[in-house]
Amino acid sequence: MRAALTQTANVYRPMPSLERLEEIKEHLEEVRAQNVAHHLELARAARGLGAELICFGELFAGPYFALTQHPVWRGLAEDPLEGPSAREVRAAARALGMVIVAPLYELCAKTGKRFNTALVVDADGEPLGLFRKAHVPNGENEQGLFSEGFYYERSDGLGWQSERQLSSNPHFPVYQTAVGRIGVAICYDRHFEGVVSALARNGAQLVVSPAVTFGAKSERMWELEFAVDACRQRVFIGGSNRVGSEPPWDQPFFGRSHFVGPDGRAENLCSHPELVIADLDLDSLAGRDPSGWALARDRRPETYSG
Image (cartoon, rainbow, N blue to C red):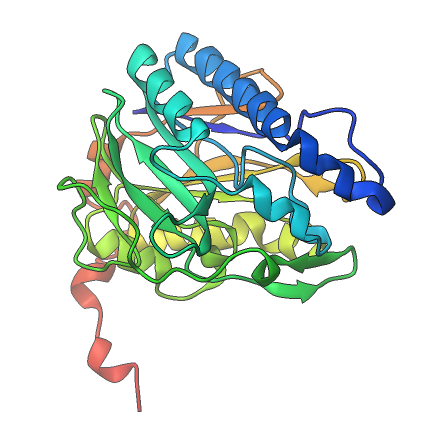
């Protein structure tokens, strides 16, 4: 599989100052439309380079607004299946013959609740399901605030799924796509023991982790966590982070998007500054581990508690 990740930031301009954020209320559709158009252009570029799958960044249709608390951004949430972003993504997937993972700000029509959600669309344009972010952070590091609980809730495990959802775990679905079995873990989810193993146990060959992350410890752990999980669970992992900064917050994001597998980091085949593209040999996952380890065989779960 040739897979791609985006590494970009909010393209809408001009952004109002922090003191005048309320003014963005009249422009939320323009914010969404410009960011969706930007990402679909990246998808076309990736497809032109042979990519069969692309994962956009976390909350890709807007800026990372959780750096402050302002209710105006709740208006950016949309229906994850029938909203404008979903319709455009599905049309692009169909036209390109490409699997697209599109992390949206979801407004659930049934409950009125909001979630940080990834829509997974197959290469024929058909939606496969919704992954809702399971763990929602509320905290602060040496660089800034991340107040995500102000905007959306933790996954309730009730996101819509098609019959091509393979997992028995409703919180961590795995999807049979045209190019392989795909799981999703959004940003903060990556830190928690059991997330990647739950996806791997249910058949995931590639786990994509769209993120918006910053701070010294986060940057230090960014590649380490993925590499260890990929090795232990024998899967490929693709981590996508924003890069640069977004007015008016001007919080720097360190980027460093990449793919890693059980045997190390995959080579980035792309020179485009906002794309990472790699060839992932999914068949190799069924082969013998070159270390001689047989971690799945030799696990002793009965000894891990008590």
